[in-house]
View 1 (spheres, rainbow, N blue to C red):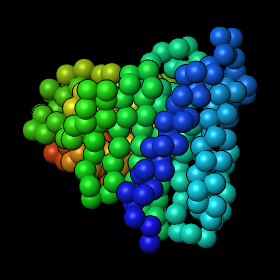
View 2: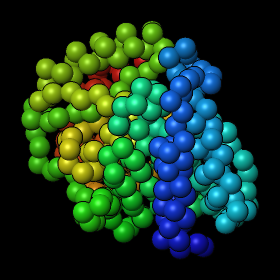
View 3: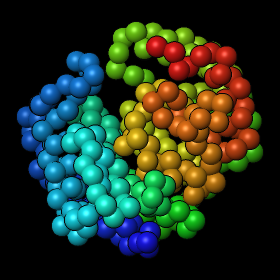
Length: 268
């Protein structure tokens, strides 16, 4: 079994190289290379370039590992390690040159996430976690351990969320939002799932929920939240995933879950 700290080191080195590519080589006339689920769900040429770099660097070091990437699909391996990669989480932010986008790389060992990196280049921040080893924020001024905000009542909670790409889903998500907003301090929508999860781990928001997230969106960020003392799940004990991801300190998680469940947030 591979030491998770070795996987973290490789993820961190690779994320730094991908981030440098995305910042330094971003074309002035960056355009949309393709769309995915809808015309607003975009892929840029830089998404593809970043994922190629990440895959090549990791496979050069660990040729027997498996991959799940947002742009490249899945590839098999026989080492027991799988890398879950989002080459740009927050592509629309990247397209518009807004700061909240990130490179997210997580390593699973025998199906369990054991190491994760979320690097936010425009903010000069890198979030890391190893299973059982806590969560850290690295900046130019140093490194600090992360803890989610605990003891926050629902009506004082700042809650992050996001919206899907299908118009029909957005209509229902707006209805859900009207059920949540009167019950909390306020809502924030940043445009990147993994950045929102890291903001939760750092105490910048108190909770997060979103419908439609995929494994590559949450793999690294969810580990960072858990290692910072938070809980990450779906509805009624289900794993966090496309139906719903809820994250918060344990007591606040229960309170937010109680608000969300009757609103049927997983319905399209």
